[in-house]
Amino acid sequence: LAGGATAVRDTEPQTLQWIAEREGDNTFRIIDFFASEDGRAAHFAGQVAAALQERSTELVEGGWDGGVVANVRNSKLLSSVIRNASESPRPMLASYIEITARAGQEEALAAFLTGGAAIVEETEPGTLLWYAIRHDDSTFAIYDVFVDEAARNAHFQGKVAAALRDSAATLVNGGWDDGVVSNIVHADVLSIAY
Image (cartoon, rainbow, N blue to C red; front, side, top):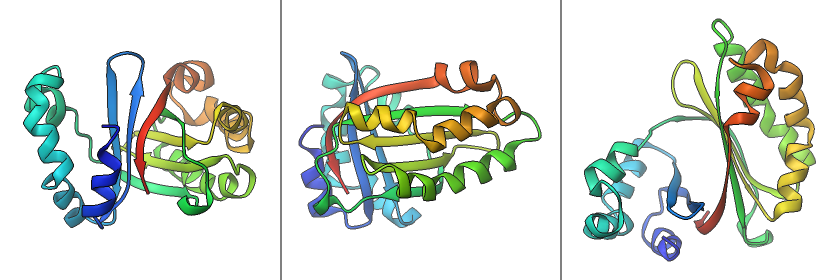
């Protein structure tokens, strides 16, 4: 995975962002974003996917079907912040938060998350990538990539986090502590193309 970004950058023009990350000793993820379904199909027919499929029996618990394909999640991007890669330091850290909307608050949470991009863009220079994602009718996620630990800390103390904390009791199943904080997952960025 650490070498995958170069192949994606060189051979997949429709893959807008590709991030390989590591959480702990044995959990790895690939997060990628596409302009269209054609781009997604080209990615899964591309060099990195072929190389992973070829070695998946040896490297991945469950092999290609049970360990890779079974964990693919296709979602809708609501909004994003994507800082210019040539002007930014190499991203080092990532965070992912899955959030479930309270019943009846699905569209309000979608609107809240969609509006978050402008605030992050304006107030968080160390947040290099920020995505608001909708997995299904009631399940959402925020995915962020940071320059360093100071930038990640600034993000979690920033305006979007404060607004979500203030609105969580209304919008999020489980509120702030059980619906947001308990779902935060941190990872190290191994390789990135964007």
